[in-house]
Length: 151
Image (cartoon, rainbow, N blue to C red):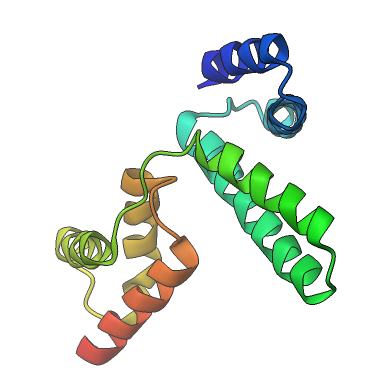
């Protein structure tokens, strides 16, 4: 993925796409911060952590977008939505609702989760398998509902 950021940055610079260049630079800066943080604990940043970082960046921009729209700042709202589109371009295709439901059911079955106490195991299994492909906030709520209903 790191090579993809570098090559996309070069292409955007050649094409003179300022917003794309700025956004990719922002991604690489956030990734560098993550690398420095990981280096302190002797770890390396893997693909799943990069995907989680990108998802976090999209989520924060969506929150800002809502605020700017409510405040009537169309210029800033446009900037945020353009950045969201660029960042999403690096993320794998998200799962639809049916696929998310199926993934949760499978993770519950595979982990042997029986009650709400096992929720952490199920969510961890989902994160390992579907990093960058589902909203884990919503998924956690669905897992909780399923385990709560059965437990």
